[in-house]
Length: 247
Ligand SMILES: Nc1ncnc2c1ncn2[C@@H]1O[C@H](COP(=O)(O)OP(=O)(O)OP(=O)(O)O)[C@@H](O)[C@H]1O
Ligand SMILES: [Mg+2]
Image 1 (spheres, protein in one colour):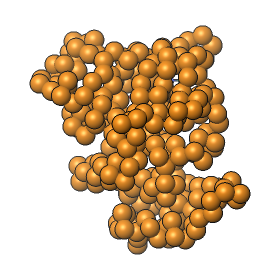
Image 2 (cartoon, rainbow, N blue to C red; image 1 turned 90 degrees about the horizontal axis):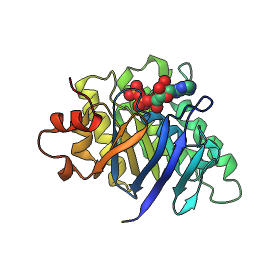
Image 3 (cartoon, rainbow, N blue to C red; image 1 turned 90 degrees about the vertical axis):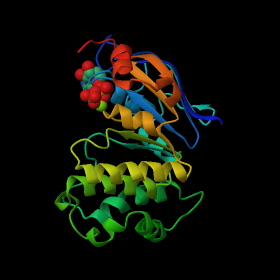
Image 4 (tube, protein in one colour; image 1 turned 180 degrees about the vertical axis):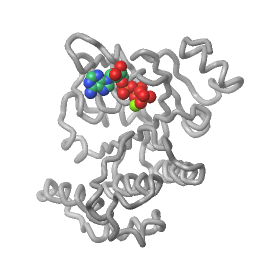
């Protein structure tokens, strides 16, 4: 096993000298699911934005595939195989599902002009196998789809880009139990295809159940980490302890 991603003593924030992340150390092994849990406002999404280039860290390093990527812009990281599925929708509501899927591929194809051409049509056709439910929705405006179907489009968009690392932020928020199963099935699928996942979800038990390593973030600092076995037992009590709260 080797780490595809390492955050080394990363400190980051949005405004002035207010640090939202403090000295964060975290690593994601290639082809595995790593879970990140913590209370609202702990800084989980900020970690993801720091990794994918939306928020350059003030200190520390982000290392991907053995190379420092600290401060590189998001489009460069996308080209190198880092894809972010944000908490909120990233779809263009009035554009068709097919066009939403095509757009990032076209951008990638333009940038890849010199090295490694690929067929956008083939990439889109490959999606049918893993997203049969979207097949008949391709010409519908993305905004007409249910919340769960839109989330699947986000995953399809990710898979079409053939990422090596996918950052998945709160994928199950607002979805029906059936869609939640579907979405988590796709996360497992990604892992089975060799894509490393950094997963944030409020369902702690589920994250612990599917991740091979788990990190707990509290007020911008990693306060615990371990394997699912380390987190076994009375999960609820333990999580309360890690997060430093009493209900
Ligand atoms: N764009 C921004 N500008 C200023 N402050 C921000 C911005 N985004 C987030 N913050 C602040 O950074 C802190 C961490 O926010 P973040 O969204 O990373 O937390 P989170 O753990 O993802 O929370 P949630 O579980 O609610 O998604 C919060 O105090 C938040 O108000
Ligand atoms: Mg968040």
